[in-house]
Amino acid sequence: MAAVGPPQQQVRMAHQQVWAALEVALRVPCLYIIDAIFNSYPDSSQSRFCIVLQIFLRLLGVFVSSIVLILSQRSLFKFYMYSSAFLLAATSVLVNYYASLHIDFYGAYNTSAFGIELLPRKGPSLWMALIVLQLTFGIGYVTLLQIHSIYSQLIILDLLVPVIGLITELPLHIRETLVFTSSLILTLNTVLVLALRTRFK
Image (cartoon, rainbow, N blue to C red; front, side, top):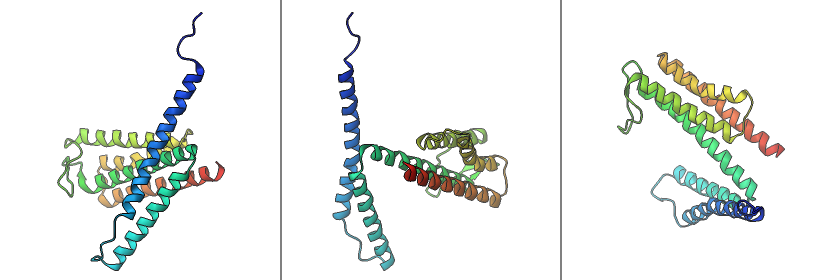
């Protein structure tokens, strides 16, 4: 009977080639970042503090990019996975902060410092969009960090608490407290998970 599909060895080689190509694609941006850092100079017209801050950020960028270049393939993928989880968490906190300061559920009107309206203006559509957005951030966050226990559901609930405060039209200072508490819990969880993963793996 003829074999169905390509041989197992060819499939394995194709799989390795895909991972190798992905690894190169993840390392190449670091070369461009290092090149851009070394080919740009701080603005001498700025204050001394700004110049020192720019130099610190440049050194940090070179250090992180150099570390990424020398990481093994497995560590490289973990680095990008944890970085993506951190970006999702930061984006979720920023969305909650923006919603708490610029959205009035009673008037169903949202504003922005730049005059850009990113969310619907109708009340039900507005809070449904926020819930879906935070659920997406939460599910992506716990998936990237591989949190499979009931603790993952508590993290997603933590992201939804500020939205619940908006829907129930709590006073502004209480909504700000909810946003701060939610972001603090999310930050502590991220630091704890990353510390445990880097320690035991």
